[in-house]
Image (cartoon, rainbow, N blue to C red; front, side):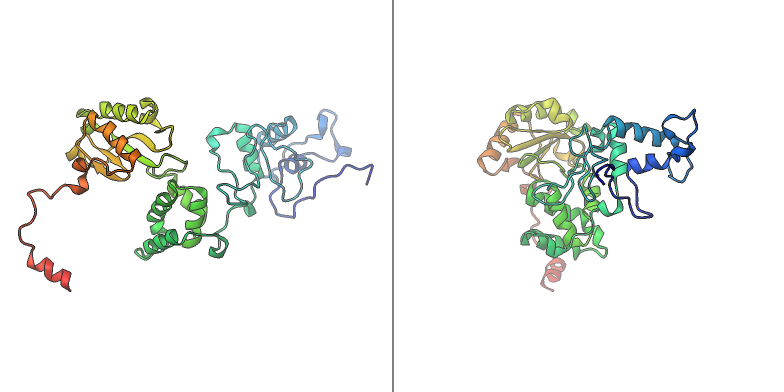
Length: 329
């Protein structure tokens, strides 16, 4: 074997093939090469299941090093990497969970990297439903998720409250937290990730400890929401343009500030959600006080908290007897 080139083992029949196997399947027998087809390329037979252009592009990317790195020397079961990305798929842990691939948006990849990633995918690479005994789920998190599951006839219907439990426990919907929730619910982590990435109130990246969402929809905007957002940005020490778009985190990690669309509290406009509690109506002088109270661990704006406001028309003088009877039964 010393004079022969060592090649990686071929895939089993019916298994997905690597880009080099795909490109080689398009090559004819060297003995049957036509003189006008250098390199032994023959027209696509269609058996490979992809077009000539895609096959040629993949082969060129592999040869130029823009797609998969180490295809020739790739050992079976070894991690697949992308050249420019550094690590599209790798056998490293995310958030201290060994064996989980790195989560990276495909929007950040080049076209060659995306093609390489797709070509490298195998059915066995998909994350299965984790077994509960394989995952160390914090008892309080498991209790909250199981409580939510008991309120719905279909387990998947509890996905949103389960993700809220994860976010409140870890501060964001981390890969570790979603995997723990998936183990409790008997779902795949990918399903929970699809739900978390759809709703913008779920945070899939680490943020500040205290989320501050400044509503700037039409009612709040007409009553000074832009100035209120600028005042909160100045108090938190972040750029208000950044906060108005993707959100901004203060240097001490205490505050995550973001301009937000309608929060459904037009009657107290302009208003702000702080730690999932509503406050309003506010003016720019309330911003510095709220941020200072947050950092000091004090109660935030008790005089502006919606939860502490009395009912419209004042307290009910005498409880309805029917309500009291229902409560006793």
